[in-house]
Amino acid sequence: MFESSAEKIPDSCLIVIYGASGDLTKRMLIPSLYKLYIENNLKNNFSILGFSRKEMDDNEFRKKMFESVMEYNEDKSLQMDHLEEFCKNLYYVRAGYDDIESYKNLKSHIEEIDKKKNLSGNILLYMAVPPDNLPDIIEKTGKIGLNKPLNEGSWTRIILEKPFGHDLESAIKLNKLTEKYFSEKQIYRIDHYLGKESVQNILVTRFSNMIFEPLWNRNYIDRVEITSAESIGIENRGGYYESSGALRDVVQNHLMQIVAYISMEPPSTFDSNSIRDESMKVFQSLRFLKAEEVESNVIRGQYTASHVNGKTIAGYREEANVSPVSRTETFVAMKFFIDNWRWGGVPFYIRTGKRMPTRVTEIVIHFKPTPHYLFKRKTDIAESYNMLVIRIQPDEGILIKFAMKVPGTDFKLQNVNMDFHYSDLLNVKLPSAYEKLLLDCIQGDSTLFLRADAVEACWKFVQPILDAWKKYPEIKIYGYPAGTWGPECSDDLIVEKELQWRYPCKNKSNDGLYCEL
Ligand code: BG6
Image 1 (cartoon, protein in one colour):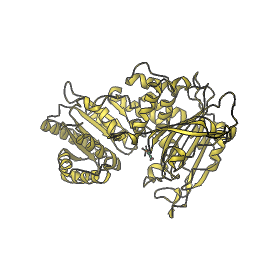
Image 2 (cartoon, rainbow, N blue to C red):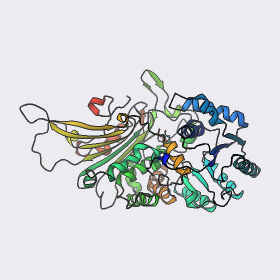
Image 3 (tube, rainbow, N blue to C red):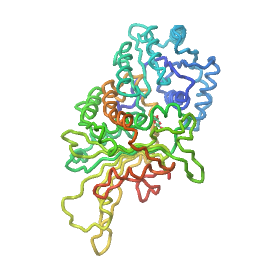
Image 4 (spheres, protein in one colour):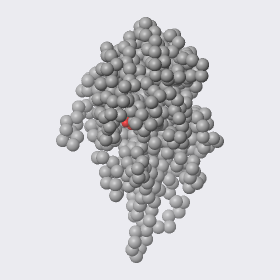
């Protein structure tokens, strides 16, 4: 999977985007497909067929998508003629998601485009649709036969966007329904965090260097901390977010995948099943919280109105489509354990939140202190341990903090940084997560996609928390002013041994990794 994609010739295919007039299509999918196109990864052997409820014809769709690439493509040196050529491969057909005739119409458009463009029958169905509509759409897509390859030797694959269900029960139901029409080999459940270069690099850091893995266990690691903070709020997604909340939106999927990559055993081979088997073993070893343990191990919060950098920021309850008495969490911090030989007794602390001071995702491995202090430590004890920081975003990179002698006549110690930043690599641009994952799917590589069993295992882990919150409304939800690091009591999770969360700071020279604050 880590071979250069340019070395493989991607199959020609027709990409059908369900939900083509939505936000994901315009912000992520079309700009990523365009990048694959200009980087010669799609050659000319592709077409994109949009399918959604909005009334539009091919030309209007092309115009809209042209504008989306102009707006969302990060590379501003766009070549207009390339973009126009790309847009000629776009088509559109209107959907009535609950109307079977619509799917018949879609099928005949697919057959027509496939024939006209000589695409060899390969079809990628991308489900970028509201979660409530998904089961019906899968059912009708299957009933009409769109689950089957168009001809002998061709393939049909389906990409499902998160959320995969709303809880354990609905996830099991959704998996059953999808598997009724598609084989597991055809199903690609996307978690865009796995498409991030810096997340994939966790495996390379761990399994292609000798210096980390011998220390990567309970004997040397004191605790593991993972933060995924966002400065943005819920961005017009009140309707969705009200029924989701941070636990479902980020912990159940993105953070659990990071936990798996950080804590899995080395796979015996680098293929999709070995990697996913090892992730699965981690999920099976997670210690479930009992109802009475939830309040003291999981802190939930909700942002309140505040002033950030001179701007007035509305509180969550004032956002559109949010109840004024909502108890949906926009912040979660929790402590848990992985009950296996490697991690027995090592606490994992994870937190995520909206409207925090900055956008930062990082993993911090805190090492234990040396068994004997030869030198008197002048710094705060928590600060003086070795720390490995894997920065997922921004300023993607890796940092090790270690003690050195401050030059002088006595033995004063100070922590210093050894760091690597992706931005130091010359002529290398990080592909977007969606670019990577779309290409992997077209090439039939499911390594970075989730298997049904993993999705269910992650729901199993968060389900007792959801249940406890539902059953015991007295479990507090703490307000925190927008622009802060969440409820102050989330520090209490970590108080043992005078510890605290790592708060990244803006100054690269102090912190080693840059952060916008
Ligand atoms: C999505 C969540 O899956 O991930 C969003 O639904 C969140 O609420 C986003 O903002 C975060 O992704 P990233 O790549 O910006 O960290």
